[in-house]
Length: 628
Image (cartoon, rainbow, N blue to C red; front, side, top):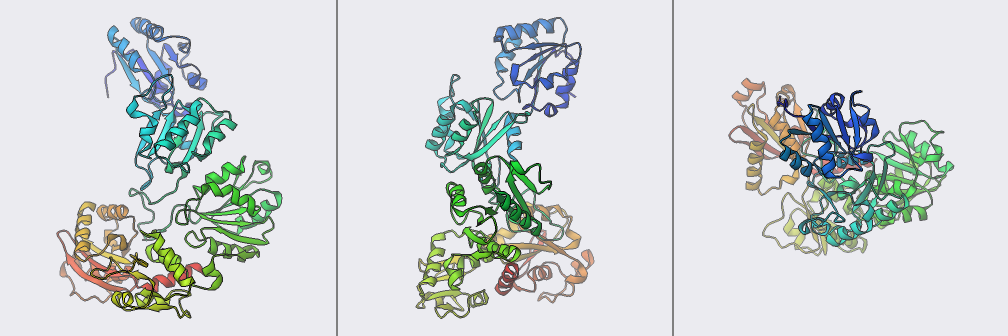
């Protein structure tokens, strides 16, 4: 433990406001202090209750720097213990550097005890993570230049070009200027933003919106001080990829290929009749949350029901949180509420609107990619209303190519979405459209359309009369000219079977698989699952690699593995070590649900791998089952 025998002055972070956020060390020092110099109204008075009965309390608000240091120094020279209590964490705009400089001149020892910064209390209030994978991995803590200047190289305009997560201190009174700087610097006006007033205090206020709306919201709430401005895509909590640190359900090999809230439906009602309709849906859907006006809070007791004060603010928040939304209100109101939030069909959640009595259920936004059309049909079955779907392919009974692509790629947006739109348009215009491979003919709604053609090779498709097409391949076809209206997608259908030595590291697995995939001209984005023997389910390297690749991992017992017919001869080493005649090949086949081996086992330094493919037919059948 660090020796502090000569320390008489402690700079202690009081935390954001909630006295329970004070550190244990900070609480102990307050209890022992003879003098507590606290930063005025910025420190919650409840924190001062921890001070011992012998302590003198001194408010530093009316004192200047010299007076503050003089009080602390005089007490320390008399042998008293002093706590200088700052709000938040002293290192963030705590003005402790100049205090410490004067104490150095007096040769008085001091120590700094950190506290919970309001930047993190605000994130807790928003229930957000600043560092979402593939969204933002950087947090900028800053302020706008005001009475205290900011170095020119650190201006908001310059920092905004990074478009990272940003927590802006001491600037709520200049909200219009802040927004202007951020937008001019590079943040789109549609960037999610929030204002958190007195984070963790009893009178805490949280406002969410976008850079376009947050200024007006702050003015309506009369917030101009003691608030943080939080900006960045992470505020909207739109998860693009799961963290490589945690991935659920590795032990039994199941993992949803969706975002965290994809299965949860957010239902928003406004009126009493709408509330009753929403309650019926809530009881029918296991994964649902019902949002009601605050006026109903005393009438409803259900942990799955939440209450809002502002319909506008509530919809803004859930739009960035949930992937399926049902708005029980007039369609006109619903459209006006979500219009400023829309980005694209690839990013927007599924939005369904219905009248208060659920007579008409309308697929409003993201019918195919987000699944609003399917949700509309599902709600119709539950509540008996009339489903209204206006997507032309659905109305006319044509194949929905975007749904097909989503199924094949596990929801990965095509590199050139415009080409996908062109393929769909060609189908609707009754042009000749080609598909490779022929197995795609098993997809729903593919049969019975004379303008749809299926081919056994890419060359045959490209040389055909088709003006547009879809090519499903594990890598871009080489040495073949592909028309600009032909979309190439990489299916997520490869299963890697792995046998490995104990103690193998994830980095070695990554290097080995990358090398093999490069040699075979395969994309690692096509990996859908890893598989191994159950004796390896505690192997940390395997688990870490699956997390890194964000794919599920399945483990099979030896008795199941030994029933699988494989091309390679039985391995005496594997039989002796784990009781199986082999690991990589049979596990790959099992994970691919009986699919073909694309690569027989290959022995590397500390592991053996094999690759199998899930048949397109199985993928498409799974989609039919899911939709049913």
